[in-house]
Length: 256
Length: 291
Image (cartoon, rainbow over all chains, first blue to last red):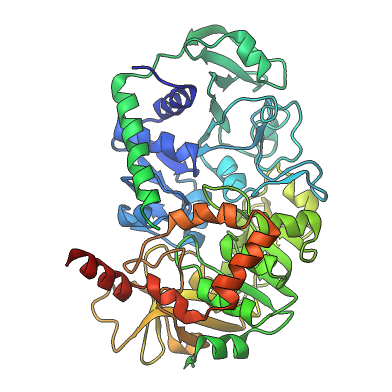
């Protein structure tokens, strides 16, 4: 089946999740990837949204983190204070799945502001749960479309800490968690270099050139020693993803 | 002890100019009807607190009710920016607004500290990030037992908490279930509270012994406003109107379009306008369609 770059990105991101994961799900593209994983290779994955919905199995993708669908299909729903104190701070998540507006080579994220904080060019929504998701989850997966506006040499604001300045920066801050271990884009998959922790390309999606990656990244991209080609989406992955998007469009459009 | 009032009386007697007001609701049970009444009564110089300010705060800010916003995520979820908030913050229209920005973990902990009567919340957070450099209310404390350095923020103690709940009984106890957010904490942390409800019942009936219930002696004013959380939702009553959240992006994009919408749908309306979204009226429409 033919597919587009967004579908490749969502499917590659879904594949990163394991059936045994306890996953803190960010809204938007992370939510699509997490539910695709649940509907394909990881049926037992535990998906948790910050609204307090634990082990939720939505039939349609939520527009917000607290749509009724999430509560209706959850094992249990806990208060928001409890979600952040007992479950996130308590270290119950194996992985957190995030998006962002800007990212740098060490997978630090900005969702706060473009331009100076006090005099913004563009005021973005802010961190929400992300600052503590980034530090408290066992590891972090990130899904973002690549462009020179979003993949930048220097962030305007560090909303969520990735690998900081690289190397052992996380350890120096006392963080025992791994931080960002996978960055999935519409062009490639990045993983941190074992020593420098710089996000390096380990897999390129079919048909994507290194020139295209260079043209859409605001820093000089490094490649791992063995770069593979991302397997193309299977027919099943594509059809499940398209069905969930179609159900979601019907559900969100008919509530006038 | 809670008192049953009309929505107009409830806002009149509970919220004053210059108050610090937390209108909470985490996607679910957002108190839109109460927010509209605050706009109609032209409250000014409010400090608005909320973890996830969405359309109702966009409307309050665009109508000039607020001087300051305390928040952790400001936007129209899944849709984009709040254009009225951004116009106020970036261009000072209709007036300037200042911000105090936190993370969700910080605000959730701060509400809990407020409800617990503590001066501060302590948690493991803000590691390696920039918010502490721009928000002087984010500080650090050393654990006296382990030496661990932890983040600290002041407790949230609003003058007024405003929430929408599912039901009240005739004794004035308030019932919430579903995504319960930080509503209980907000009410217990506040000096005064205003609760709108979908319905008033003789008895809550069958329920889990662990249902979230605010006893009448913890609640201030109660106003019955069926449909009062629309376009957010009320668990078991009506669904989130995601189509309206998407439509708000265009309605709010320019000042004139926003003002025209507010005039027609808020200033020239009353709480009864929300009834069309309530469960009885939805059921009646479904029956008519079936006949």
